[in-house]
Length: 631
Image 1 (cartoon, rainbow, N blue to C red):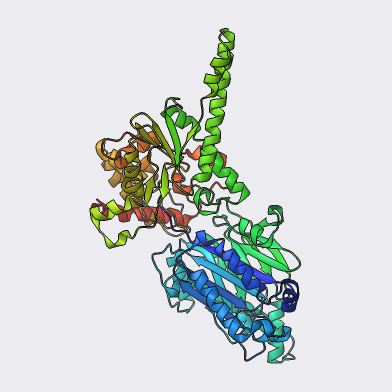
Image 2: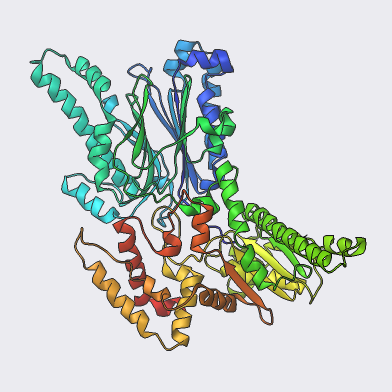
């Protein structure tokens, strides 16, 4: 119901044949750009604040550009970028060029292409923060083009580390700092090879020969292994040197996703799997997942390899990717989302006291639709079991006849589309109650889809995070249908803790579950717990680097059952005079539905890295010290 911002999406393409091959087979030198455009558009769900494209040409002659970049801001950034590229190529007369001219002169045409979609999770915006980032140098092997889907939790320490080496980052952001760290390691790798031939071969290599040898021997593994051990966070980082070394590198906990495909014409990497399947027409089993701590690396001659750069520390693949962020067109995600809906059926049946005939089932468009299908299938299974038991009972009593069977078979799951997403209303022009009134009309309702005062309405959503939209828009809108009761079902567990690995929710006061727990503590005269947790968090933050850390915010929730918090949430979002119940998925149900993605810190508080634990303690102390301003 409440859209979350998520950083980000990547796409990388490495051509393995000369440009003329793609012109002859596919009719255009811009084959890679066309495919990159499709990969980016089909990952548009991952970023709508900005986008960027970078290209490296490995056959350009000195005096001509060989690293290009186009970036734009806003939800239409992809279209703007490729319109601009198309105009440049048209002006240059690309399609009338010879193979040699296209390879050496055409703008934005090259063997290496990368694209990036951005959602800001740091509160910082503007072109200065749009990927890809570029580190320029007169030596091709020292140029670095970089983009990524990442958020570092120890950015302050990394900044200090970079500055202590004498570097001067131009911005205090994790993107700039990672670029500086990788650039520093890249310089060292260049120097290593330079010294080897300068010292060992007694100056027998001229400078231009040394440059060629450096480009030939540069080992991107050394660059990654030198920089990455200091990083704490979730990341997939894509990079390319001006001389043709390419890498896609995933964090050792596997927090952020990455997939790749290789054949004799092309190497592709993206944040999601279905986009590769669709754009290149390949089967899912031909696409590989980049494992935690691994890097896909490509040499300047187009030879790929996949190697473990950092040992895998844990499997913390993000479960929110499966619930919400990744597109449901992935076969595994589609199945998992259906299972999340199915697993909620026992709680739903208990809530409606088994009264299916007086219950209407719906969903809040549109990301909950797949979970809705799973819920309906589970309800149908329940009804089939009920029908079977009724028939067997009547048969045992000798009362089974055509009429009794017909009556039993009439029982069905009543499905209606109760809510319809209307136009995106421009509520920014209003404030306060006026803004809330306008927000209530973001959704429209299907009048007459239930019996007023008699039917219970069950609506499923993929997540209930802040509760604002639920209270100000969804429930006030559904209340106009005048149901007997509304049951709001979340296919995800209660979101209790901030994320620091790439999802835009970092403050304690954002979460309706946290607000509910605080209100319960106050109601029960347990406000001392708030102060106690604050003191514990302050002690935790005073610990030195490397000391074991504890998430003390867990103690806010430890005094209540999940059901008690859910009941309080229902009370907090309830429109006047309406009977509301809120049902959440259990963490156990989440793990059962998504067994390969156990990263659940949003719900459990079990952060996979020390930086996450430190920052959640910091988030609570910030809330406590300013809590009066949150009321």
